[in-house]
Length: 370
Image (cartoon, rainbow, N blue to C red):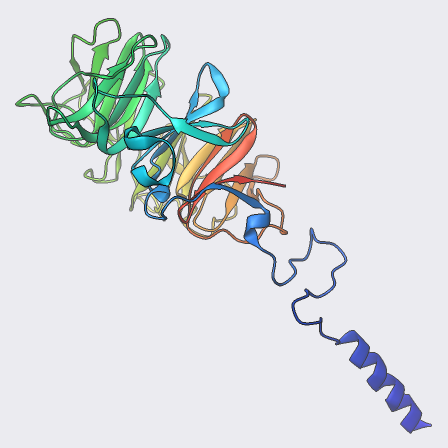
């Protein structure tokens, strides 16, 4: 009797432990709670363009067209050889999310010449002007350029100011255009990390703050003060309301990768693991409470935050291998993608374009499909 009982147990255990046939995943009851072996990430990443791997992962900025929510502009350094854009694509391309197609941004940039080298950012002002910042030059004549403007009716960018470093961020405030970057000199005179100009005639260049700091990677205007992130400053983040630049709160122990303001609140994401008085430990996304930095969420992000995005009332954070959002009800971060979506690899940037989520991952520009 015992022999038959053991035989039945053996047969049942064999059935439960049966492996799948070669090339087929193990059977699952619910794909939303199990990830079967062999799932291809491309099933969930509509890879729109891959280019040559060394160019598309250099996307520096993704900017929504203020007059057309389906349209966006991608800035960076793009190889000329990957499509029909010709020689005028380097620096900026136009993207249409309605059909996931790319196009040359403009037939020319400076007269009959193309834009060479790298564009860091593009900004669209309230009157429709486009400003580009970066470190580039026009081929003929060879002129190093960092900041240029094109009007809505114009067919080419025009040179604005002479700087000794690239422009990385542009904003509009009170009818003026503000721009910051790596520069330390305007012409041959030392200047502050943020300058402003009148939007009507690109004149009346004014300095913001004082000369006691240099370099602005990112900037935001919140509650009558300018905030900048600076890799050269102790604490990495400074502010000024017209006077000396001062450390915001107690600052951070490492770099700030992104900074956004939402409804009057300032958020930063980066590789920081604490503020300088050690009252806030690790989360990689932090909020300024008016006195110092406090971490967002009770649970810590797994790795540094590379990009922040605010959409439809939610704050999103991009890490190398995941996209998460902040759930205010539970005061915690949650995965923005279902468990059926395989982990990301070398994710660097995300952007919602007309309600759809796009990103940059390992040299690919993709749409996240459901």
